[in-house]
Length: 71
Image 1 (tube, rainbow, N blue to C red):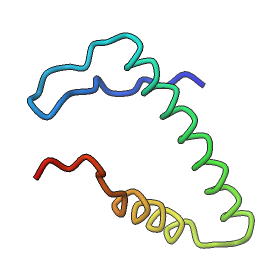
Image 2: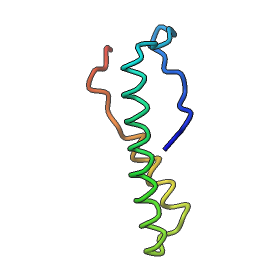
Image 3: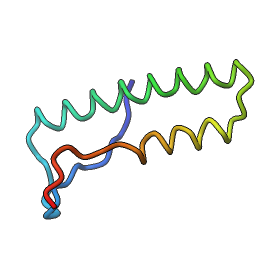
Image 4: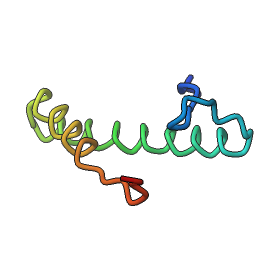
Protein backbone atom coordinates (compact mmCIF):
# COMPACT_ATOMS: atom_id res chain seq x y z
CA UNK A 1 0.00 0.00 0.00
CA UNK A 2 1.51 3.28 -1.02
CA UNK A 3 0.04 6.41 0.55
CA UNK A 4 1.33 9.92 0.76
CA UNK A 5 0.97 10.67 4.45
CA UNK A 6 1.47 14.20 5.79
CA UNK A 7 4.73 15.55 7.04
CA UNK A 8 4.57 14.88 10.75
CA UNK A 9 5.15 17.88 13.01
CA UNK A 10 5.79 18.33 16.72
CA UNK A 11 3.74 20.58 19.01
CA UNK A 12 6.27 23.37 18.39
CA UNK A 13 5.72 23.13 14.62
CA UNK A 14 9.10 21.55 13.81
CA UNK A 15 9.08 18.63 11.39
CA UNK A 16 9.73 15.09 12.61
CA UNK A 17 12.55 14.22 10.24
CA UNK A 18 14.01 11.03 11.74
CA UNK A 19 13.79 8.52 8.89
CA UNK A 20 12.96 5.62 11.19
CA UNK A 21 10.17 7.53 12.96
CA UNK A 22 8.65 8.60 9.65
CA UNK A 23 8.88 5.01 8.37
CA UNK A 24 7.13 3.65 11.48
CA UNK A 25 4.36 6.25 11.17
CA UNK A 26 3.82 5.36 7.50
CA UNK A 27 3.67 1.65 8.31
CA UNK A 28 1.25 2.26 11.18
CA UNK A 29 -1.06 4.37 9.05
CA UNK A 30 -0.94 1.92 6.15
CA UNK A 31 -1.99 -0.87 8.54
CA UNK A 32 -4.70 1.26 10.16
CA UNK A 33 -6.10 2.28 6.79
CA UNK A 34 -6.37 -1.34 5.63
CA UNK A 35 -7.91 -2.50 8.91
CA UNK A 36 -10.50 0.31 8.91
CA UNK A 37 -11.24 -0.26 5.20
CA UNK A 38 -11.94 -3.93 5.93
CA UNK A 39 -14.23 -3.05 8.86
CA UNK A 40 -16.01 -0.44 6.72
CA UNK A 41 -16.60 -2.94 3.93
CA UNK A 42 -17.83 -5.56 6.42
CA UNK A 43 -20.36 -3.08 7.76
CA UNK A 44 -21.57 -2.26 4.27
CA UNK A 45 -21.87 -5.96 3.42
CA UNK A 46 -24.00 -6.36 6.57
CA UNK A 47 -26.20 -3.57 5.20
CA UNK A 48 -25.18 -0.94 7.77
CA UNK A 49 -25.84 2.55 6.46
CA UNK A 50 -22.68 4.05 4.94
CA UNK A 51 -23.08 7.42 6.67
CA UNK A 52 -23.58 5.72 10.02
CA UNK A 53 -20.39 3.70 9.47
CA UNK A 54 -18.45 6.87 8.66
CA UNK A 55 -19.84 8.67 11.72
CA UNK A 56 -19.01 5.72 13.99
CA UNK A 57 -15.43 5.64 12.68
CA UNK A 58 -15.08 9.40 13.25
CA UNK A 59 -16.41 8.97 16.79
CA UNK A 60 -13.87 6.22 17.38
CA UNK A 61 -11.01 8.52 16.39
CA UNK A 62 -12.47 11.46 18.31
CA UNK A 63 -12.65 9.25 21.40
CA UNK A 64 -8.94 8.39 21.43
CA UNK A 65 -7.11 9.61 24.52
CA UNK A 66 -3.61 11.04 24.75
CA UNK A 67 -1.79 9.18 27.54
CA UNK A 68 1.08 11.69 27.22
CA UNK A 69 -1.06 14.82 27.69
CA UNK A 70 1.24 17.55 29.03
CA UNK A 71 -1.47 19.79 30.49
